Length: 358
Image (cartoon, rainbow, N blue to C red; front, side, top):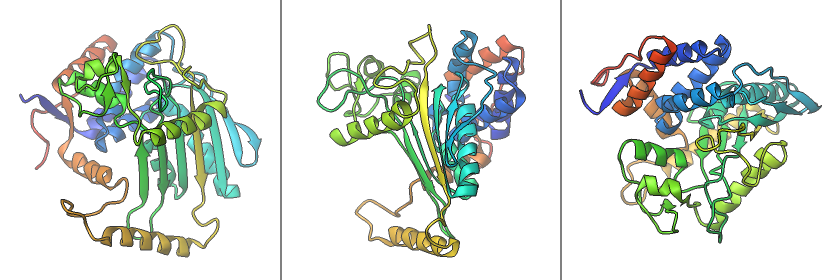
């Protein structure tokens, strides 16, 4: 068997649902969490897929994630609501929040939800996809635990706070941007450590402030912002929208899910959904989007590029491929998942040593 194994996405989803249900998570919420994790794996965002599940389960067993939150958005105006996540799974909180934003947007053109007392919500694109599939433009922000210094600083204060946005397309591709203000998110560094891989130079500094390619040393130090002060500023903006405005932890007070085990994280999120035809007709909007996408793709290509893609197209293509060939996992990652299955008394994740289809 190779160092990589493959699982059908339906099998991965069923496995995650069974594992969560065995831990007392309601079936509907188990399905939500599993769908978000597997969607991340399908899109090639391996850092936010099934590999994260054991860590979430550990925090749930410690009482730091609430398996059964009673989520009730509280309207602040006809187009804005606050949501107390009650320390539930971030996936459940995020999905509920975006659903509420979409509900308000259907009626009033725009909807905004700010969530507090949440936990890590995985791939931010999950909620952009939720909005895109309902036909809405969206913005999704979150804050996170300390990982990155503000520009000019040497100690971690800011999180690698994600920024995601989406806009439905016409006949051509939509836009789906999901990015971190850091050169490399800490999740990618953790995966590199688990797989025994190096990280590119310029991603992180070790505990002594020296550039490093060793992921273990990087995790003891800090990650670096993209574009220097620009990435630092973006992280602050996400902290304002995700933390300051929502009432969640902020300014370095979000708890690290890998280090803090005496209290919940208190992560904050911000969700916006908007009708794409709020200012122009739906027909005109679609035509204008197609013009944009067409011109982007037709732009003369720089040396070394065969094509120009819209944000999200690479992940969309990878999702299509993995739905056919299976989701690849490292052997070590699967071993941890199988131990969780044995602990919960459920069947192992079925995997193959080879891709499932050519």
